[in-house]
Amino acid sequence: MADLQQIRTRVTLTEHEVINTNSTDFPGNYAGYDDTWSLAKFEEKFRVNIVSLEGSELEFDMVGVDASIANAFRRILLAEVPTMAIEKVFVHNNTSIVQDEVLAHRLGLIPIHADPRLFEYRQEGDDEGTAEDTIEFHLNVKCTRNTQAPKDSTDPDEIYKDHKVYTKHLKWVPLGNQAELYSEGDIKPVHDDILIAKLRPGQEMDLKLHCVKGIGRDHAKFSPVATASYRLLPEIVLTEEVKGERADRLVRCFSPGVMEVTEENGVRRARVVNSRLDTCSREVFRHPDLKDCVKLNKLRDHFIFSVESTGALAPDVLVCEATKVLMGKCRKFLSELDVVADTEQQGMR
Image 1 (cartoon, rainbow, N blue to C red):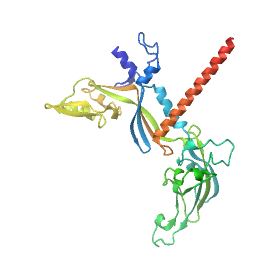
Image 2: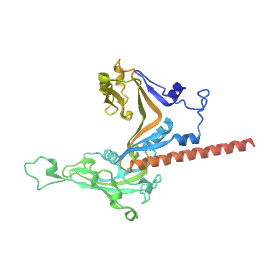
Image 3: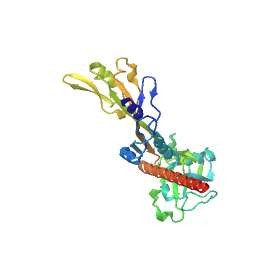
Image 4: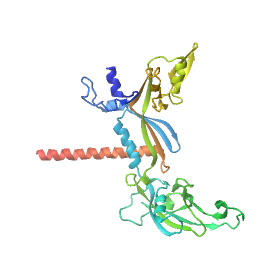
């Protein structure tokens, strides 16, 4: 039974392979073992723990779910949580060396600080947009010479004015009643110091930009996260006491903070401190006298999520929005099942 529990709940790392990677906890897979799913069992095991939330980065644990559910969250975060991004670029004048189409692509990738929940999707074929579905920016920059610059200077920052076009030059132009609904700080580029292009005297840009609501599945510029990933929680089990010089070598086999050497009654022993920090390098298997002292596992239903937002929305808000998207998918699936069941019942009559 102990081996069965190990197979059901752990992924095992050996010297040359990773075993028990397939999920086996489903009804009927093991004779005499009840693996039926129930809401009570799920509620007992499932939990979400916030580990850290700093600025645009969030780390949290999701425990008690299958890998398919964890991966669904990851994919939704990447591709189905909407944001606002520059979609239309109207070029009135562009005499820089950056081609219009390259410039439009670069502008589209600038993260925009605007809450997409306050806007609607723009209708297909609508080139003008409305206050409900469009954010408008203007970019008007012209490079000139600095007449006050030292005569012997060769530094472009000194001899030119406005020769670097940054996102801070994007000016929000309210449409309709947007000025009444939002303040100037509500709608802007996430970062003011993103370099768009470099100009020289006589060169200028005069553009009008339209931001619309979209999802990463349509274009990567709408993806709200810089990274969204997960990993299984590592587990390190010492099978015997490791003392003295062997303890020092064992600690060095793992990432800093995973293990430490403690001294008690003059005897130095290795112990596991925080297996969460382990990168699963399996360095310990290179030492013949140490590789049988530890077992390296990963908990099959304990996922460590790392989410880094682009800045349009806070990472904890993104996770909540991803949850809403998944709930919507479940409701749609259940409604389709009801339609199929009703159709079959009518056919039987």
